[in-house]
Length: 232
Image (cartoon, rainbow, N blue to C red; front, side):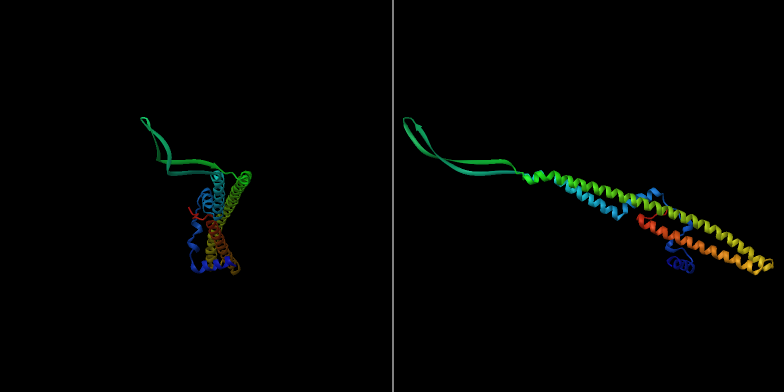
């Protein structure tokens, strides 16, 4: 039903829909379309982000050892009093002496929770497995996307070839109709043959418009899939 509504629209509007003339349509190389499809695919972009998050978690896990190391230090300024025996000549001199001293202590400590130590290798292995799964999923989705682009590209190329065949058939039927028109006026062709000739011409026009609609639909689908213009 949708195709026939578009066909009616073409008849009344008298110009290609979507600004597309399939008679003059040339496509970009397939390799370029495959590259654009992989770059613009939301599904592939999501897979890439998921893989990047897992890779970030793995990097963080590898640096967790820093959480188990602690630096400690202290700094203190104080007065120390002590008794000093100062002798001058033959007379002993006992005095209390006060001196200012600075104390500084630095150290490094290591805290290693046994549970974390035992499970870190397993957590790292799980993250690496998940990361590999994301990479394989990304490759699989890219493979399926490329297959779909190739199929739709081939379908569109076939539709364009069919359109060209239908166009040449219509040209032939136009010539046949012109000949039939002259022959009918000259009385050398009966009415049934004359009517049949124009019926074939009208059928050829309908087939051409249907082929154009198919090509236009395939063009739009492929352009949306690729995410960029596909015309050369």
